[in-house]
Length: 362
Image 1: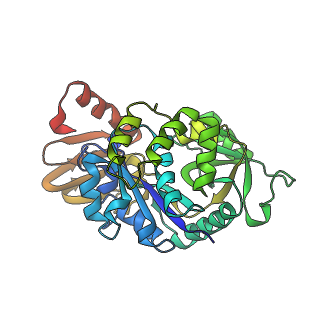
Image 2: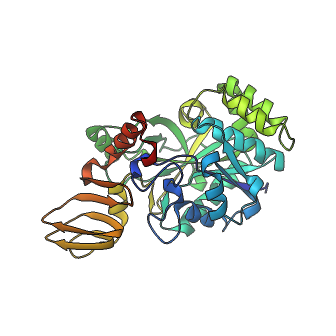
């Protein structure tokens, strides 16, 4: 089989994880769910099927040195920094150029840096099925998660469940994608769950580098034109300048909206391997261990009549009395207190700090 490359997207800041996640110490570089940072867990999982020399990390200049230190076994030239964030389509296109340069028949496994996966063996099995399918076709494969409840925080993928000529890979557990759906409201999410043909959209992809570049050329020709200018400079002293110039021109667009929702080559493999995208502090609480009061505690916490709270305070003593369903995150220079069900709104605090140019807290 062709060479399989791992591509880890690690350029975000994780504003929903303020005040721990900052521009210089983003969510993926933090130990949020265990003793390893999130990107260390993601990369380490991939090295069980991919040579570390074939891992690429896509990040930004501010985070490059930190991630290089955390992933010391990844070649420094494989850490690609974008001059400015332009969402996932340009990021993936840039990585595809490097993978194709290393192997014209390269297969790409594209993952976010900050997902939690509890069953590594099942996850790697599914990636193997996806890589094998991609190797012999121009298909674009994504991993769908079997929904456990009517979640409103995820996008959804609808698949064809009936057999037919539209799906030559059905025997492998691969399904043809019918449509993508944006994050729904609760009644719609309930309907999706009951229908049986909707999966959570994990944002994880597998395809040949030449296949995704071909679809970018067809569906996002302006992006493709700029990528080709970069391609000519890979391995030369002109590369950094070419990337800088291209990113000043290309528009921000996601791979889902730009390619996956429009392509006719999209297939999905349903997965059930203890996945979470850890999109909020409440999600961290949900998957973490708890004491007899339903609390997740890190640090010096004195509690009385406290129930179902997430409290993080490794450097200061925090006392809680008669509270429940709270998120409390205490750092050296900032304190967050919010109701658990409103933890998605933490992003608005980071947005406020940015508007007010309170950069010391970002």
